[in-house]
Image (tube, rainbow, N blue to C red; front, side, top):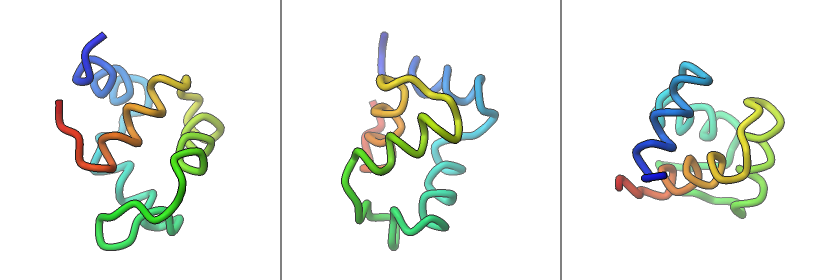
Length: 70
């Protein structure tokens, strides 16, 4: 599965874009000024619990938060 396919599937499942997730992560203190400030595990655990994402999808969203686009 391509990176974009992961992002598309996440958006279909949750109704949220990578930008939406970045805003939520900033509110939680995981990002500051657009930069990730915590370990990947904290973010992926949050995504798994609150949005019921699988590990691969949570890691794709973490990568998007880090700036990956493809």
